[in-house]
Image 1: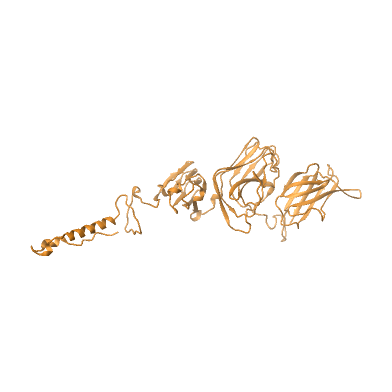
Image 2: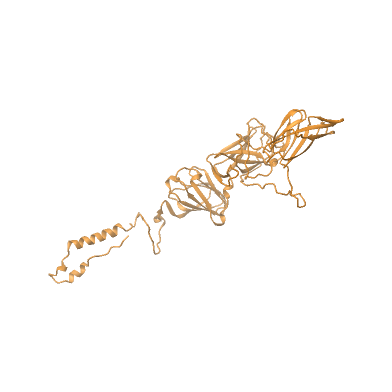
Length: 452
């Protein structure tokens, strides 16, 4: 950009005497001036709709009205204020880069179509309302939730696609918190079945390789569901409140749902991998210590995304709507090195698997932890199958039972050196004490506990 510089001072020619050759105005002098003027005009910015290219230094103080505010690589400088109304605010390429939300309720903010933007474009969204803002991609996929009094900056990282994968985000300052871990879930009952739903969102999972510390971001572009069929108890008890954990699993990049009775199962550790059992759809998902999903999966990463608090008059008949539903994503604490009731400094070790079952006829589990099923091998002989395998077969076994319905006579639980004992199953035998020896007997009430 250059200013016009005069090459010939034509005014000085007026003072010269007639006949002085310098008094003559030459065509070359006029042409030079026109060239100088043309160069200056060509390198100046028009006052209306001008375009700046290359490196530019601005000096001085300039007041620019909103109508004149510049747009640089799609970034419309300025801000807009919106009062939340439990509605939707849709941003476009011409929306100001700073968005401020006030009010007392929620609002959904839909970001522009990325193909209209440039890489690196960012929007700063401040929530000065008392509700939660939900930021979505143009395909209506959840990117992040913004709590009250928090600010987040979202940046376009792909100019293709309409999912959350085209955007990155970071909470600013003291508001830099992982609030996106709150997921939008729902649960309903119909036809005596329970259906849980995870709405569109993104989730981070650990790697399915236990020796890798990498994490993988997975997108849920449309709502996904899991149905617990009528008759499936999930190990719940009639007329007793239960806490069911809704779990997202990473099936090689596809997010699926699973469910488990956390009242029975206990603490979760998302650093581990889990295996699930197919719910089956026929009312047979009855264990409280088994992860159930639509299709059985093996050694998959998981996230606890919410809880359903439910009390059903008849276990397995899902007739009453949940009394509480929370969309939490937390890593529940693992079992401590010492139980809270222990005294002294010696460590405490809890059971790695336990079960109480009726061994008469077809074995029926009454209650359990980390036990998927009981196999009947013959009179008084059973195999206890673990849901999650133990590290090895070097574990301690304890148990007992009764061999009469009244429980008057005692029974002895035994294992033998040649019986099945693996990391995933344990064979036990129930012997009644009668006369001068022990006799195999089907017991109506047997308990087995495994420690490792």
